[in-house]
Length: 231
Image (cartoon, rainbow, N blue to C red; front, side):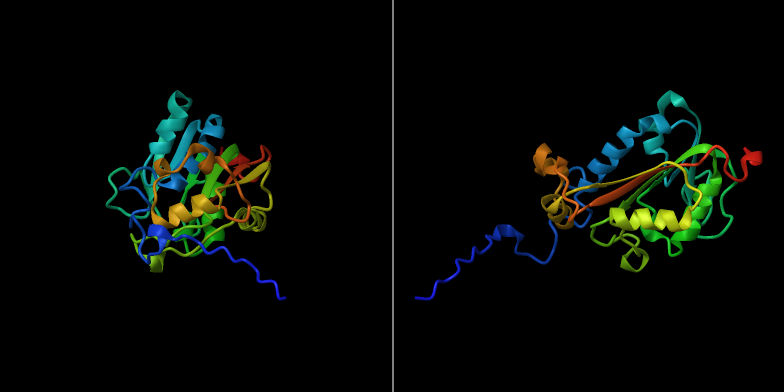
């Protein structure tokens, strides 16, 4: 007698759909899943947000995690219409940032939009003072951003890919910590636009390296780095 393998068929319920529950990463339902992981990473490294700090788009994370340890903050944006921007520049253009000005650069969910990632990282690195810290968050699994549109959302970085990119781009980098966040359930929820509040805390907290939602890195510029004379 031939034994038949019992195949468990998935129960799709309302997941059998071709459109997400939210077109805005879950923002209209609560907190997007990746934002929970960004907050977790920055909370672990809040002590690095200090002195003269730089962030892309607005200074929300600088205010949240730096507090009184920040002596001044700048906002970088390519869009001159951003009234919060104190530096209007294209991160993907060589030499677009001032040298050795910042103690911390929060480069959060930005590199996926930059065509020339090595140039962007090189600019960020040169903008740090010796001893300064680069805090990077990038998507590993995510839908393409509907705004500014899929033609402008160019890259995804698993933790190993982020580590390799940093090694190749910043060979003189000092202490590095590369981490991943997420799991299959969190990744599926994020792709569907299901908010973090709709998952249990333990479901968000679990990490499966096969299904990272977010990759993050903390990189310290060595005290003896080039351009120290400009600090």
